[in-house]
Image 1 (cartoon, helix red, strand yellow):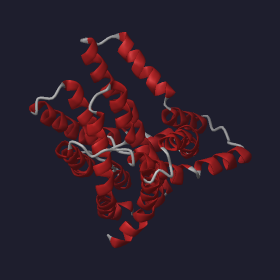
Image 2 (cartoon, one colour; image 1 turned 135 degrees about the horizontal axis):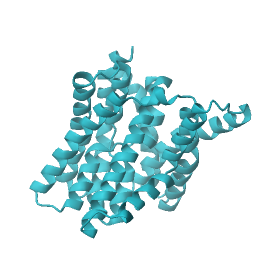
Image 3 (cartoon, rainbow, N blue to C red; image 1 turned 30 degrees about the horizontal axis):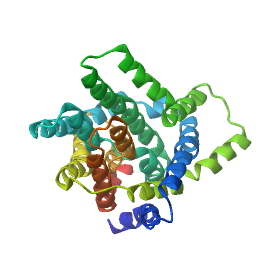
Image 4 (cartoon, one colour; image 1 turned 180 degrees about the horizontal axis):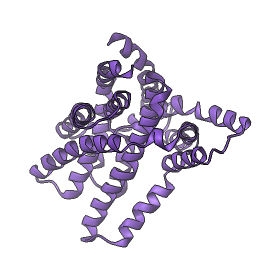
Length: 311
């Protein structure tokens, strides 16, 4: 456990450095926004393309893997929704809280950290988790909020979802990389070196940006944020572990990576969606802040627990 903690510590130390830089004002909100944009559109996209271009679709996509992850997410998603509705909040707020309970920071934290800690073979399962989060759950929250406001489901809602997916550089990067892999198109050395150099900036840039963005987050609605953090850091990996290790025939290594990915703190893009739709952004902000702080310990515990499955 101590060894795993020491390995994860540098990643969280980078987040802490970004947080302190943002908190002291050395790194302004505007600077954070531009750094995030650089990582999102350039560095992380280069890393994802390079990873996926060296994988085949069969290495990434597995129906049992998808079923196990969706089952684990679905259980926690429904539980968080039920608790929210029991508290008599609206369906839109319930959808946002449910999103907090299952969507981890896979893109900015999971991809760079888990591939380093669990080995290059972890890239495929991590990309699969990221794709499911982006395609299924980002679409679901958009449909629920927009459909609730319109009072019905329409082609406009589905069009909004489709455009959102096509404009997401992470989805585009993974799809293009797999397309290159499927077509057996060799990437020239000079292009590969360029992607490697640009992608290397993703890890420190993303982690620093996470910390700097957290500096502007508030910790209001602590009771709800604490519950959502518990869902994300404890219940979500537990449900995914039950699905991957007991209910579905998932390969042990893939199951380990899936469980580790599900233990990540609440993703920043949930806050972006909440702010965009004007639905409980402060609640999401607090959940991100609390879950990220606690995950310094819980992520290490989960990775240590699944390490024997890595072979």
